[in-house]
Image (cartoon, helix red, strand yellow):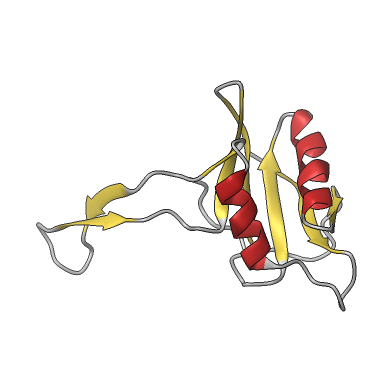
Length: 118
């Protein structure tokens, strides 16, 4: 999956709101949070731990097909990274930006922190 763009606030005085994004993730059926996973505990060999998915990351699923991923920036900047390789991802990103009173841009103007996708 490749970085497709970012969703940002319309201006510095109107930044993207993380809580509003999380609320949209919980209400929009196309935005699907990951499931908890069980992994070995790195601090206690032989013990397993359950890792909960991030509340601010969601896969974009349409017709049972995962098209991409949206996640809040790992460095806590007020922006959403838009991951995906399907052209439909840009259309959905623009719609999500509209719902968040924000802007979608396919141009990334600054380096972003890259994290593993879910």
